[in-house]
Length: 115
Length: 115
Image 1 (cartoon, rainbow over the protein chains, first blue to last red):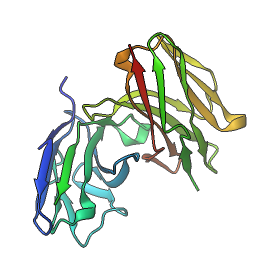
Image 2: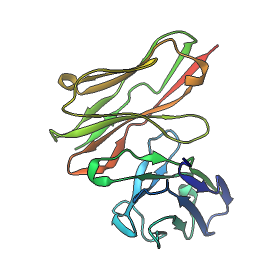
Image 3: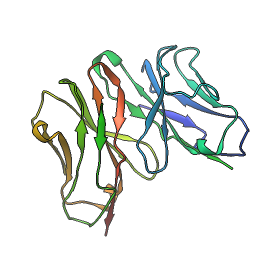
Image 4: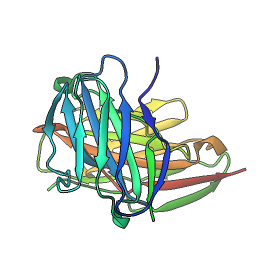
């Protein structure tokens, strides 16, 4: 079974440029998560989707970050414009059924460098 | 407030040594869940174990074992006869009953196993 797929794996951009990350969850997983992982830190939740609905986006900096999961499958996270402090790893995870505290499975992440 | 502390930033051992990674958590909930994830250099977080607060039985899986002690709010992870392939960053995480989808991660412990 394929795991969580993310692309690109690495992205280098200049500040003020836009950037987008893509995630395809494990087939059949209804819940999708985007996490931010700064160097030397654990992941922090940015947004959680149940199917198409964003059910927890309280940690998403909405002035520059946006996300969508239009058909309840894959998702895109966008930053516009990027700032130097956005350099980090952006991880995507998915789980089968949030009502059963189902385990979250993570993708390999996208490492963003903002110059 | 919920919090996970991994006081060991980095541990170095020689192959075949046993090593214990510490995890201390804080929560006001009586129902909660504890997790361990492994993050190898490839970046993907690999799920290792989930434990609920009502199950204090220790668990063993091959060379891995986990010691859950509610009295000290600890959920420690031991690798027996470590191998070079065990080198990774290990994260302990907590989720609470009223928000089971939200994982609170510690800052991780980097384990280096030398041949």
